[in-house]
Image (cartoon, rainbow, N blue to C red; front, side):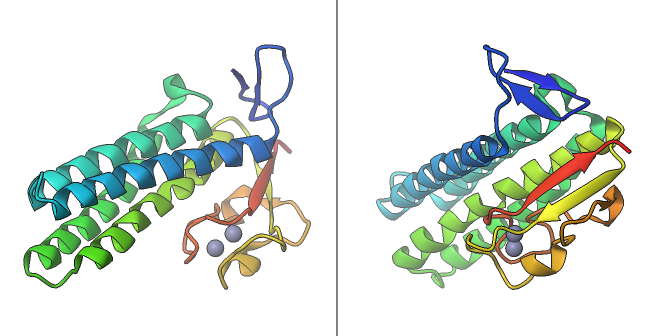
Length: 199
Ligand SMILES: [Zn+2]
Ligand SMILES: [Zn+2]
C-alpha cells in the first residue's frame, strides 16, 4: 500500500485507489480483533488464570497496540506519525486507562459480576475508530487541507449526536469539522465519513 499525502488516499500494489469503505472495514476488523482479545482476558480473569492486575495490564497493552495501528492508518503509515499524533492518541489512551482502572477497582470490590465484566470490558474496543478519524484530520491538516465535508450515512446505526455534525453537503473550514467519534456517544462506530480538500 502506498499513501499519497496530497489526496490522503492509499493505493494498492496495482496502483488502484483503495476506497474509503475498505478503510472503514479495516477499522471494524481491528475493533473485532481487539474485542475478542479483551473478552479472552476477561474469561481468564473469571477462571482465575490471571488476577485483576494482569487483566488490566493486558487490556492496556492491547488497547495501545490497536490505537497505534489506527493512528498509523490515519497518518498514511507508521513513519508519518508525528509528535502531535502521539500527543493526541496519548490523551485518548489515558482516558481509557483511567476508566479501566476504575473498572478494575469495582471488580476487586465485588461490584462487577462475571457477566457484567465480559459485557462491559468489550466496550473498550469502541474507541478505536475515534483514533483513526482524529489522526486522519490532523494528517490532512498537516498536509495542507483547509476544507472538509462530513457526511452522515442515514442507513447506518448512529447516535443522536451524529446528525448534528454533518456539514450538510458543504465543505467548511477543516477546524469546524468534528472528526467522527469525538464528542459522540456512538464513538464513531457509525458510517460517518469526512472528505478533505486542499483549497
Ligand atoms: Zn455518533
Ligand atoms: Zn457518526
